[in-house]
Image 1 (cartoon, helix red, strand yellow):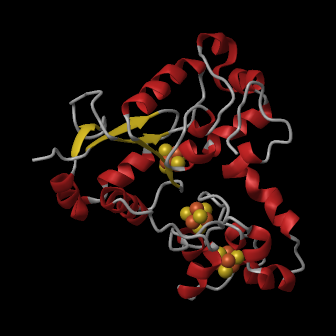
Image 2 (cartoon, rainbow, N blue to C red; image 1 turned 180 degrees about the vertical axis):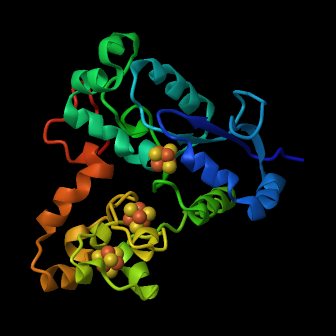
Image 3 (cartoon, rainbow, N blue to C red; image 1 turned 60 degrees about the vertical axis):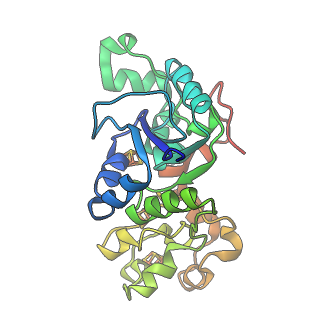
Length: 256
Ligand code: SF4
Ligand code: SF4
Ligand code: SF4
């Protein structure tokens, strides 16, 4: 009998909230455990091992000393899946790139800044090849489950490529623009069930952009409120800064 696929979770610079989302899949976890063996999952088990097929990697690359660990994960795994904004786009960590690394270090660590190692924050794709991405801060549970099922079935996962506005309207929310607020839902990738606008918050595009925002965005929303696509895109840096950097951080090899 062939062995079950072996799955491994790894974390780099992050809050580990995306791994918590995986742990939150309580109802589905027993089914998952029936089809895979989990080799590494620091938040849930003590076991450790290098023999795995699928690696889920959370967190941004923010220090050179992590390069070897990332490369080892890539060498061990047949499939590498980046989970969460930190791993997929660098996430909020990229904000320090704008501030300047030295200045950011002094702000956080003061006179002890030189005790710590850090470099420009980048998505893990800047260092290793990534086979799939689960976007979001944090990732939606349903999308994690969809990716696990599709990987096991050998099919391409169904990831939405339409804007959050679609899900927002399905939930019959009053658009935040009608309340005088700004919202990135017109260009952000759906799949979160419009979490933020449904609870009164703005969408900051933590799930990245849809593939063709200029053609697919809810232009009626922008037209109605006299906004241009560029004005909306200017807000994009919070979660997606690394793709918007006119001059990439020194030494950065940005993904295409
Ligand atoms: S993407 Fe968000 S929730 Fe996930 S690890 Fe990064 S900061 Fe935490
Ligand atoms: S712009 Fe924001 S609040 Fe308005 S419909 Fe789109 S997602 Fe909802
Ligand atoms: S509404 Fe926007 S910011 Fe909020 S979870 Fe969805 S994509 Fe992320």
